[in-house]
Length: 245
Image 1 (cartoon, helix red, strand yellow):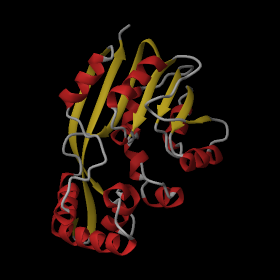
Image 2 (cartoon, rainbow, N blue to C red):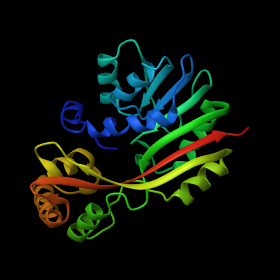
Image 3 (cartoon, one colour):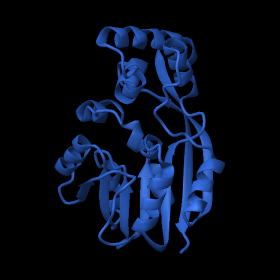
Image 4 (cartoon, rainbow, N blue to C red):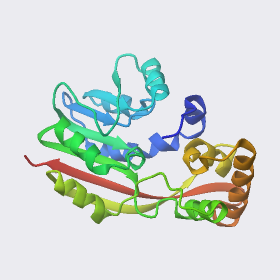
């Protein structure tokens, strides 16, 4: 996981939670339901779920994100914990997650935690990076740095459905779709790489990192920059599953 610059994240990357609005519609939270927002970040979508009348808890492994969420939404409970080993005091009706689980390499451990958090019959609704997400970006990084530095987990529908089914879930919906995403921050692709791609440059000194970053941006310019606007070649996986036992 990167070390998040939360103020910069909130100022330039609102698309992360804006796109999550569609996942909330799929979740369809009901008044009085208990819901966990797994990987809640600074709490924008946790707040949206609470606004539907649900009793929601936000959980994230970033201390800076949780601190910001508590400032923004003091009436909501936020918990600092990891997706692969968290425990709740009481089971919930649903677990929701947006743009977080591609940071969790041990998908089986995360899904097992989700299963334990849910009541029998509870639902799991999530969206995150799927197979070939940011394919062009990763290809440019590999071309410049020479090694597979992908720190993320980008499964196919079949891969993730297998994980879910092995942990006692029934998959009811699964979508794998392209979402070319405009990078609205003024620093475009360079800013995206600095915000989300820190692990890609691990082991490089500051000068080498700057040089690599500039070379990657220029390699991507003819591919992902259109009329002066940068895009990220996102490909997302969206799933709905029900705990069977």
